[in-house]
Structures are given as structure tokens and as C-alpha cells.
Amino acid sequence: MLAEPNHIAETESDGLALWCSPDRRTQSRVATLGASQRLRPGQQLFAEGDRADDIFETVSGTVRLYKLLPDGRRQIIGFLGAGRLLGFAHHDTYAYTAEAVTVVTLHRYARHGFDRLMDQIPGLARRLLSAATDELRAAQNQMLLLGRKTAAEKIASFLLAMEADGGNDEILVPMARGDIADYLGLTIETVCRNLAKLKQDEIIGLPTPNRITILDRERLEDLAAGG
Amino acid sequence: MLAEPNHIAETESDGLALWCSPDRRTQSRVATLGASQRLRPGQQLFAEGDRADDIFETVSGTVRLYKLLPDGRRQIIGFLGAGRLLGFAHHDTYAYTAEAVTVVTLHRYARHGFDRLMDQIPGLARRLLSAATDELRAAQNQMLLLGRKTAAEKIASFLLAMEADGGNDEILVPMARGDIADYLGLTIETVCRNLAKLKQDEIIGLPTPNRITILDRERLEDLAAGG
DNA sequence: CGTGCCTTTGAAAGAGCTCAATCCTGGTGG
DNA sequence: CCACCAGGATTGAGCTCTTTCAAAGGCACG
Image 1 (spheres, rainbow over the protein chains, first blue to last red):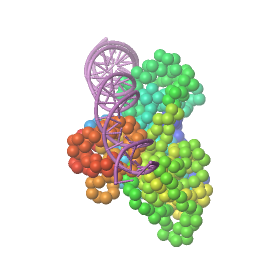
Image 2 (cartoon, helix red, strand yellow):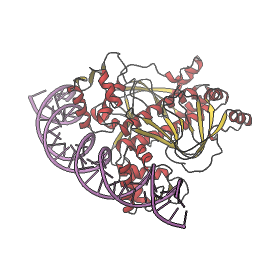
Image 3 (spheres, chains in turn brown, orange, blue, green):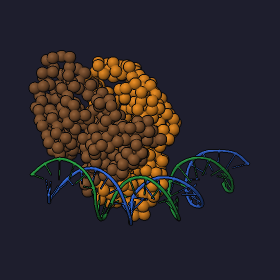
Image 4 (cartoon, rainbow over the protein chains, first blue to last red):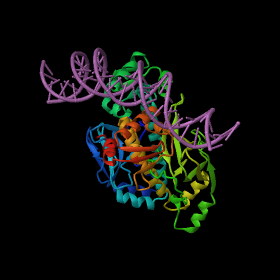
């Protein structure tokens, strides 16, 4: 997956965080490659199998990445908040579909120009490698979750991973229950039931479907780890 | 995960495939960093949480990478055949445990020397990025498998992914049933039962537990895709 | 103030798991 | 050379967790 669901807040990003070089000339070279874009909820950035001509950087909003089986079963690979890169398959087609969850603003860069940049800017490839390594680690954690955690453990892990913003114990959940289910390898009903259970046990509060408060972090962390 | 289980044959690799540069001076610089090593089945290369001081390259044999939950549940992240890199977390500790499945020979490189190389050899970081991107794609496929495929579909997908060697329809399975189960998010018994079912349906042959022949590739592929 | 979508809750069904017994095979020792 | 043993593989039976199918609730939007 391309993201652990950290940093999914609705904050703005000034962009180009990954390749903002100390060199000012480089910056402008990057900037001229990009075009800004705005998407409504549900709109696609690209679909699995499309020719991968562009690379994207999110500026605000939340994006979901997913793969489908022929019969329509869906696995969400990751959610991306502000300031993340996507579309970075070095092959010729995208390996997954990317859609806006909320209103999304982003930059689009032509891949061929980007390739050139990698040769010209020393350290860029290395910084991207570092980012890819992080995503790989997140993907491995998600494999552990999908393969070996129970529904309750998955939900607890998800909530803790989503919680990365305000510092208080308030989690803003931009995506619908169906997205959470397809991210955790569950059904909508199982997600609902487990959230209801957590609420009933007074581990979380659920003022609205999209706002969750952590009431007992310790027990939530125990659950997430499989305690 | 670090690998789709292609290239798991017992073949030898001449090593350093990823950074064998056209520049001969570079080659020797790399070579002097490395030390050879031989492990018996079950021996560890490193454990999750160890200080990540070294990077490894497999030469022959099969390695398993896995993560554990506190109570012992295990998720195998990937199997590595000959000529693969591992230990390449750019953080200070390994994110998973690596163990020999078969007898394994490998090279060990000091990370700090490797970091220097990345700055000195143009294109090395970029080649590694390309490798990391491939592994990411494999990890995403595995997330789809773990989160959304049935047991039968998982087994079929696994067999097809393992089949990458001889060109004939013979699959050599170096790992035990328990490893397969922990790779697919199943139990040993479910793996056995589904293999037995495939055999009974004359889709595969099972002359010994570690040798599987594909009798009806078409039906196997249908199964793997969720048909 | 409908209408439709998302969420929540209930009841029944089923896929995969657990527990347990048996089978097979390769390595050992007599 | 052959019987014995240990560990992995296989098979069986019952059970559990999650899913499936179904029916309300609730909220936003027109």
C-alpha cells in the first residue's frame, strides 16, 4: 500500500515536499512540470491498467487506492492525505485505481519530465527510494493486519493509525464505512458492529459516523496489538 | 512484501545483479564490502527490531521474511529466491525477521559503506528505487489476496506465482505447509484440504508434498482470478 | 417534507478454524 | 538390512467468527 493512514487530515500541503531541493533553480524546474487539478468525491485520478503517463502529488483532501477482482470484490491498498506522491509505478501502466474520497486538490506531472529530473537532481532518486521504503514497510504492516488480525484488532489498529492529527483524542474519518471495510478486508456490517462494540465498552465515542473520539487509549492499544 | 514468490528455484546467482555497474572499478568497490555466508534451514539472518547494520543479497536457497504479533501469530511477508536484496529498510532497525527456509548462501554488506556507494554511483539509487517499486507492487497484490480472496483462490494464486522455473508444469515447493499457511493468512489444515481438493479435481498432481504438477492450468487460473 | 444513500441492527448460514487422530516419510540405531 | 521414531502432512468432526440476507434508522439534499 502507499500509505499508512497517517496524515489524512484535511490540512493543506505546500506541495513538492519530496523534492523540494535547497537549490532554487531546481524547484522552479519541478514547478514548471506540474499542473494543478481539483476533483470531487468519487472522481478518478486514473484506473488500474491505464497508461502511466503522469505522476501526482496530493495537496489537500483524501485519495483512495484500490485493486479489484474480476467479480467486483475490492481491496483498498491505502488512503493518501495531503503531500503524498502517487502513480509512481516505474512500469508502463498503473497497478491500481486512484479516486478522490473527499474534494481533492493535486498537482500532475508528466512522467517523462520527471524521469529526466531524477538524473539531473542529485539525491532525488535517493529521497524517492526512502519514501518507497516507507511505503513498503506500511504495506508489510497491512499484510500482517489482513492476514492475521481479527476484526476487532483490525478496527482498533485502523483507529490508532488514523489518529495522527490534532493531538487531542479526536479522529476525523473522511471515508465511508464501505471504504474502511474494503481497506481492512471486512464487510460494512462487521465494521459497524465492531465500532458499536467499542462504543458500548466505552473505549471510543461516536458522536457522528465520521467523528470518533478515543476514550480509553490503553485498552484500544491492547486490542490493536492482539491483547 | 519483498517478493512475489517467483524465482524461488534452487538456482545459483552470481550475485550483485542489482548494482553490477558497467564500471569495473565500481564493481570491485562493491565486492570488497561484502562477506559470504552460509545458513542451515531455520537459521536467522536477523530479527525484527535488530539494529539494521547490514544489507544482504541471496545467492542460493530460499529465505522467508515474517512479522509476529505479541501472541505468536505469524504473517510471512514474502519468500526470496536467489539474487534478491533484503534488509533494505532505511531506518535503524529491521521491520521483519528473515530466516533460511532451505540451505542458503548469501552476501552481507555493511550498510554504511552501502550508503556511501549510493552517492558515488550514479543510477544506483534509481535502480534500487525501481526494485523497491516492484516489491511494492507485489505487496499490493498480496494485500488483495489476503483481504479479498477465498482459501481456494489463495492457494491457486500461490501455485501460479510459484511456478516460474522449469517451463514444464512442475512446481518445487521448498517451504513447509505451515509457511504456506502463514504466507496466505490460512491454517495448515486449510492449505492441506484445498491442495487435496485440487488434486481430487485433477487440477494438480501431488506426487510428494514438495512437488506439485499442474494438470489443468486453465481451471487453476480461473480459480486464482476468482472464477 | 419526500427521496436516496449511508449507517446500524438482527437473524441465519457458511467458510475457515480448532482440536484430535492417523498417515507417511526420511533418518536412526540395532 | 530392517524395525523404530520424530516431524510433517493429511483427514475428520464440531465450533466460531464473519459473512450474508434483510429490515429499520438517520441525515442531507432537493
